Structures are given as C-alpha cells and as structure tokens.
Length: 266
Image (cartoon, rainbow, N blue to C red; front, side, top):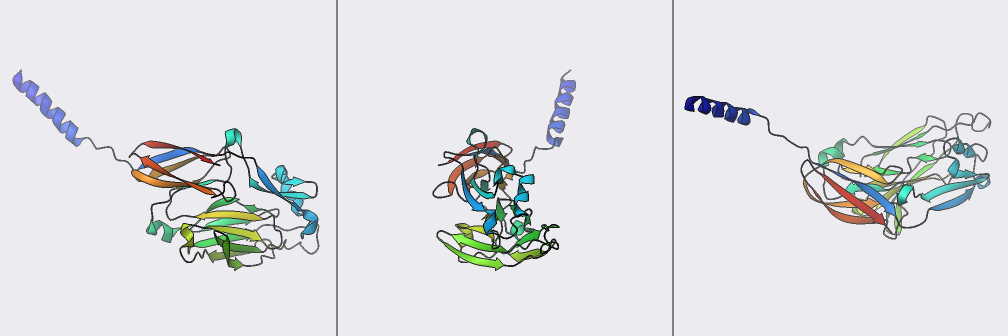
C-alpha cells in the first residue's frame, strides 16, 4: 500500500514538473476617453475654394460635414456618454527602436476633398504617405484629377515648421516623405497635415516610439494589448480638446492582466 501511494505521488510530481508554465506577452490597457465640453466645428464656404461643385460630394460619405454651401471641419466630436472621437492613447515611456526602424509609415487618403483619417500616429524619420483619389468627370479642368496640395507641419507649442509641401494634381498621384521632427519636438509636439487648395482638409498625428497605442473608437473606447508589465506613463491626446490637448496617467499593468483607464479631457 505504501509503495503504491509513493508511486502515485511520484507520477503526480513528474506530471507537475512536466506541465508547461503559463507565459504572458504582457498585459492590456482598456478604457474610455471622454470630453467634458461641447462639440466644436469650423465653418468654411465651398464657394471660396477650388472645386466648389465636386467637394460637397463628401456628403455621400458623411452628411454631417456639409450643409448647402457650407463645409464643416469637425474639430471636436463628442459621441455617446461623452466619448471623445479622434483621441489617441499611447504608452509614452517605452522606446522600441526596432519597431520604430521597421515602421512602414502612416497613410492618408484624399477623398472627396477630405483627408482620412482625421487623427492617428506618426514615427519620427519614418515615412508619411498621401494618395489623391479625387477626379471630377463633370469638370473639364479636373477630369484627370482634383488638385490637392498636402502641406505638413511639425507643431510644438505655438510654433510650427514645414515638413513638405507637394502638389498632387492627378487621381492616383502619391507622395512618400519622412516625418521630420527636430530639436526633440517629437516628445512634446504633433504632426499636422493641411491642403493648401482646400483649407478644410486637415489631419493630425501624435508621434510615438512604440507599438502600444490606440486611436479610440466612435464611443471613445480603446484597447492596447501586449503592454509590458509594470508601471507606465500613459497619455491621452486630442488635437483640439482641452487647453493642454493631452493628459497623463500612471497605469500599473499586471502580466496577463487588464488595467482600466478612464480619461476625461476637460
């Protein structure tokens, strides 16, 4: 009896040692970015810009951006339960040089005189790409393409510097230029894109140094996976919301766990 019990314990011990240990790639940060304020938009008249008959076709995709001859740049959009559309959340205290070196680039599409996406991320020295998809078969001057002129700026505080300023005259024309923050501006500033032909075409991008980021969903919610365990500085940013445009948090991420963050920009 004793030897049988010893044998059983021996088998159990072997089984315990042989079982693989659970491993984790890190933890997850979830949450929601909200805005304690009202929506804001800037108004333009199509008639003051080129292609006043073509550009209103953006209403085919988003009716909220057009009202007759008026075009709206939605600077602050607030969704359900105060969710802040267009906000970007990043883990700001990690520098992953290998990821940065391999980042393929940020891509923007010009469609119906609108830059998409409205917000996102960039990586310093890595590519920024813009493609013109617009052509107007009803305008003899724009059959081959509606001229867009993407003009980029690196912004830090009240100062900005031009990165590139290139015309894309035909449908299918593309540009591919590196993002150029200088003097450490990538740690404090952001990247802005505007069309010199159509001022209401604007997009905004936060520089990051690792893959741990998210652009929030329509309701302001987000999820960032595979964040290394430990305490991290997390930043919630929006190009227009709040005086400082961003707020910082310290988040403790457990290996294999989920940390929840509620970020309210006032």
